[in-house]
Image (tube, rainbow, N blue to C red):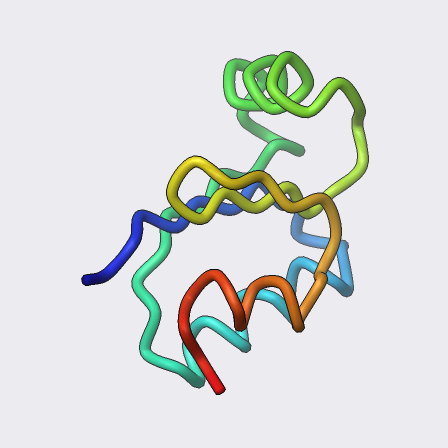
Length: 79
């Protein structure tokens, strides 16, 4: 079953781009919020994660800060 994947990112974040490319390469649908331009989503991200760093990725209810490829792969069931 496909889990909901959400990424809070900025256009200039290298790790954000890596995470989104990883999702695309594995046909993982995701919702992307640009927290550089969306102040409401920036506040939401900060409340949930307690910090300003991006990417903040949610896979189901699991939060990952940064591009932790092994953990993302594990949560998505990607070998």
